[in-house]
Length: 381
Image 1 (spheres, rainbow, N blue to C red):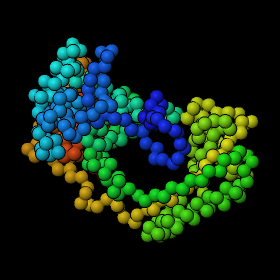
Image 2 (cartoon, one colour; image 1 turned 30 degrees about the horizontal axis):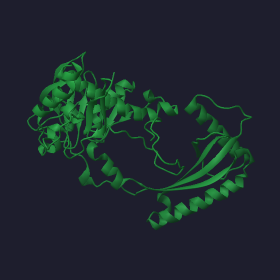
Image 3 (tube, rainbow, N blue to C red; image 1 turned 60 degrees about the horizontal axis):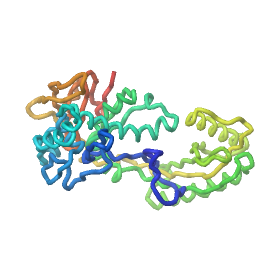
């Protein structure tokens, strides 16, 4: 459970290769509820797709994040998946008023906005798990927002993390599906070689890496890639002797010698300092745990078919607008509703970008535009 060090799951802990992914349950179906202490919570219980949020009118009885976003004006009740799904705003208003706003003594808008903020904070927790908790300052990064709900929350999350730049890719609601179908081919190999780095024979490491690289090349050849389409990357997992967890350090191409081994130990020290804010002295031995090889197949042309590229058609009939809520300090604003193509002319928020598979909320004073690839670029002051 990378998303929270307080949630470790059950059973026995195993060290096995895995995709380094932090995720948290804060989707549109997450149920909004009040705990025993009178605090507002969102999830992890979910209404799912069936019966789904109350506004779907499919039998749901508990308020959800989608209901909150509909109340706030972020979601168009007549436009979800191109209008194929109709949302019932009156039902969302009623259930939020009865279950959340009235028990907490809040206005309906304030209660819905509180639920929206809690969902954002849950997702921020996952971002911190892979940034600040690893010694990376999120202020130096760009937030990449995808999924059907990601672009709705992106600006609030970036502001809380003091991040200034957001990218929303074309077809954000299908981003994960595209990644599954059209990601580049990679084969990962790992071998345990647990020993003190200073006592390790460089030739032993060279032989082990060469053996795994040969496996990767053979597999990529079987996949149909030529030598020019292959990229082999090496890495080492290391820790100070006695530590429980390792850090991964890239290893340069070419054979290792004594000088390269010293450089590898220094690279680990720098990574340890960047991650944890300190490093041990030169007398502290570094222990090698695993060596890794990644064989990547590089396609000779883009893997995503041209027919799947996102449309940037301007909204029919020109820009529209609706009321949207932006917190206690700002309140309700008449907010233009645009299509992605409308951002070919840079615009200042507030505005809402509606697409078939996602909605993007751009807050007041934020600047937005399209780049050459059709990505929405949002800059926060």
